[in-house]
Image (cartoon, rainbow, N blue to C red):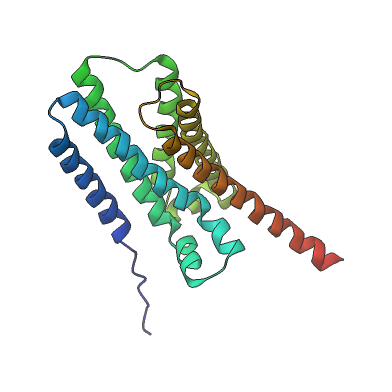
Length: 207
């Protein structure tokens, strides 16, 4: 009997690596001072990670609300887009560590605790993004872990962008932070709408 081997998409990982390499090359070409180069790298690796995260965060909702081959592909492969997000965000972490080592400063305690917990969640979700972990944890506990991690990481991103939006002297034009915050809240609205649609179905079937 023939067995069908499923092929897993590798291009999200290579895409992340290519974007980060382009960011590093562009930063080196645009700036002379090491701290300026590293600030630019940290800023834009965070953007790559955020955009990848939004795809993961909204993929299930998009498939439920707007079913199509593209949205169903996103939902079916969100494990691998999720792992590519983890890759992007840990590359961002490396850039942050190198930046603070270069400028000789240490992040504040709130940043260390809040951001550190986000990385703990990301590492836990990446480590359990496999069938073996689902079996060992049980589907319910696995889902709880990943839901808690997703919403916590979403909150950290939104706290950062809303804080920059409210700042009197943000490091970039405010429209950038308004756009990223809008993407974040739109993805949350999609998840809520998909959840409401799912809850309506049993009610309609019993009516």
